[in-house]
Amino acid sequence: MSLLSTIWSTWIVNILDILIVYYIFYRLLLIIKGTRSLQIVIGLLILIFITLIAKDILHLQTVAWLLGKFWIGAVVILAVVFNDEIRLVLAKLGARFSTLHYSHSSKDKNFGFLSEISEASIEMSKAKIGGLIVLEKEMGLQNYSETGIVIDAKISQELILSIFNTKAPIHDGAIIIKDERLHSAGCVLPLSSTIENKHLGTRHRAGLGLSSITDSVIVIVSEENGNISIAYEGKIEVIEPEKLLDKLNYCYSKKVEL
Amino acid sequence: MIKFNLNTIKESLKRNWKLKLIALLLAVLFWFYVTSISTEVML
Image (tube, rainbow over all chains, first blue to last red; front, side):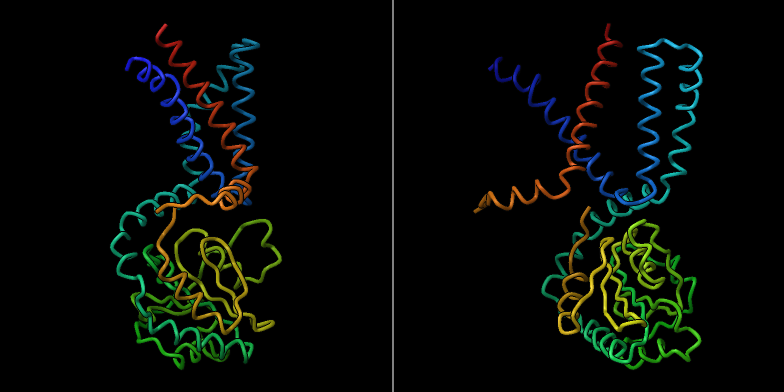
């Protein structure tokens, strides 16, 4: 019995401790991968390394004091620099717990409004009309809805086509779908700042930008080539028109993953 | 019944292996740092 408790306290607890910390670090690295934050993290790691060398190995008192003072204020600096990332992690965590009922009820449910969105997107694709449709899930998009015009109407293919008609005054923004209703149009979305996405157009970068900070599903129709793409969980992929509805159903009913 | 598919495990390990390695290294270093501090405090 004592041997077991010794193994538990010396090995298993420590390995468990390291594995939990590893998982936290891995998730954080996944979030900042490919963004400007990665350079900031590398810079901070170098600074930590310098601090440890100055303090514990070279015993440089003044440098160690200066760096020590910096690390006291660093908490505030980090909170400001990683503002978006901290918000994203906390929002995902909150959404994960608040959507337990949602994920069960949404399973196998037929979302009729998705077929209207799918058909409208295919029509826009054929006519090469640009479009940006955001489907709100659990994370609220109120701050983005406020940048546009509230419509609050039943979703129909015709309504979506009218909004994205190039002569319509609000065609140049995103429409936000909330609670199976067309909530607002002409909304401005945050652009993705990821370095490898610089080649994408503004509409695609906006879709990708929102998908990487919320759990929304975003349908993007290209004005240039008529391609239909879906941005979800920070990734964008071109979808064949005949597979669009299935993909929308899958993404919309999928529960939030941290 | 839960079935462990070796190929699935291999694939999931291969995915983002560099990030996983960095995270593991950081976790081990961090663990050593924290345990050394707590030992110093105890002494």
